[in-house]
Length: 432
Image (cartoon, rainbow, N blue to C red):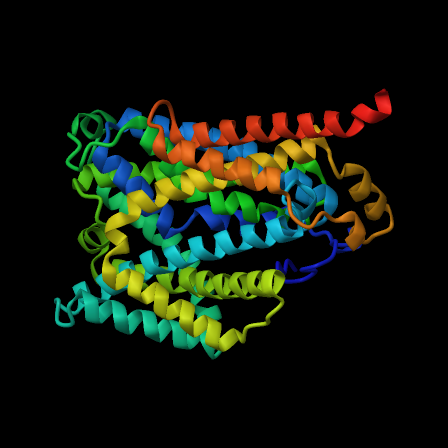
């Protein structure tokens, strides 16, 4: 059985590796979710069908290359992603900072998913509560459940996934069965126009956290072929099937509002599935964000925060984001993720596959079945951090090309060149 919380600070032993499907099903679940439906609905309502599908394909290519590369590293080393970053350019403190960035992004996802939960609940109650009150109640309720370990949330997760898949099938059949492809193509986009480059960045932003978490899963994989097949299956299921259907449904119903789509196509059952799906996702978002903040504070300041008080504080902050309207900034949120995370992922790949700065240390310790010693682990990778910041700024401020690709390429090139220059400078006296 796959348990991603096992072996948090050690390698997964070879005899603990699991079957291909055990890893692939969990990985596919990352992108067969309501947030992907929300993203694709925006694309379908803001662009032509062909352009929206091309944006999905282009973003999937970037996601696939980066995800396979990191997944391969995780499989080979048997190490989780945030831990692997220590020997892929960022060092011990740098890897902690990455965990903090992930925790903050999950806080944003909590706010967005809670806002969707509240909007669905308020809609079902005929606007009796009003959105601010509904968002406050749902956020604080879920925070309390996660804080005090309410076990029913695990049951909710098991129910929500198959229900969401069934609902997707039902809505797709009921909405699209009476429409020909030519009719869907001919429908005008009713949402605010969205540039192709921005759409690609959003697609990558919606999946990039899954890329960084991929080694957490593939450390249980047995071969590179399994990693490649898993990546391909996730892209097909999440990007092509879920997103493709959501694009066509949004165009057919002429709206990007998920609550409207679910209520129009499936009535109360659709709203119930939205609520259960947001509960499932936000349970993990809040839990993972709390652990990320605790680990970051302990790694940087040496102070151990209490889990319950940290979870309560993060839950309140996420709830406040919902009330303040983070759902209305969903596009901006995805764009931010799409330019901040690719530099981190790219630098890790450049270091592991090309520069191989710590491959000898990793290889030697892997043969011994342990992690590299502390004296073989750099404290902080300033070059990686600087390259990440520069790449992110370029992606945010420069509007030529595709922002997510700009941030990825700029950070990788800067990191590669600076590391080569430092390496040449270090060996120069020996050459003389």
